[in-house]
Image (cartoon, rainbow, N blue to C red):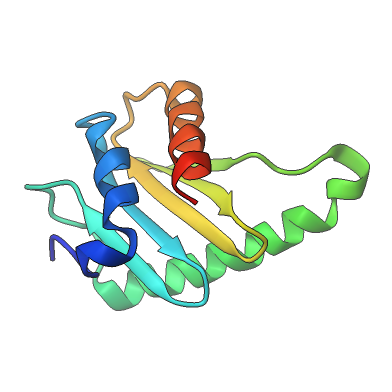
Length: 123
């Protein structure tokens, strides 16, 4: 499963994000629909149904974070580190999220800044 959507939808964004670092495994967008792409040569740990479920759960957590924004500011990104990967979520518009998974040895803050630049330029 190297590409789950056509290039014309979000392909430019996915290609630019994946080209930032070879240690990025996967990038996805959930905005009511699911779109995603793996780094070439990467095998995912989850099946597509599990990825979709994880994105819906991430969207729900993001909605909870936004409820606190009036007191502490808008959330910029969130990251969870697991035994095998980092999982980064970033807002996309009012209702969407970007999900990026990486290998563990990535400079997350630098990567997030680069993804935000791409997001703001493309969307």
